[in-house]
Length: 188
Image (tube, rainbow, N blue to C red; front, side, top):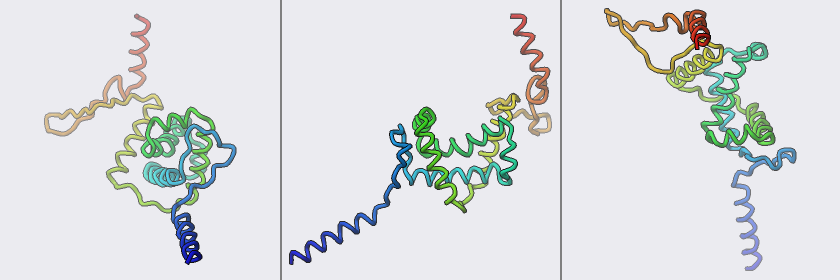
């Protein structure tokens, strides 16, 4: 009887041990990191990142990415790397990761480990994708020094059509805007 109870207990304990997903061991070089991403978080991050990249950069090649301008590289890293992570773990934890070198290296390690494992992901909905593309395009224009108003501005002409209000001293005529800006700075 004792033998049956002991064997049953051992079998139950070993079954419970195999059923719970285990966290892969953290390499020693990342020990002491302020924030350590779990395998589950890293896999979700890799999938969300892949979705964002497929949406914003559907035809991006490695050669094109290698020749990104500074502004393009920044937008790519924000929209493909940091924003999906921020949506997953929160802004405060992303700041912790960014401020701690070991945490950043471990996050990168986890990301690379699961990024290669994620082959096919379900694409974002067309509406989500369009919003993400527009935001990325607007942010890129701002990074390149083009003025972008964050407010909704829809003026209509006499026929009821929406007219573009980007006239003098805005997106279309940055040179004129710079002259006004520097001229007013000199007067002050």
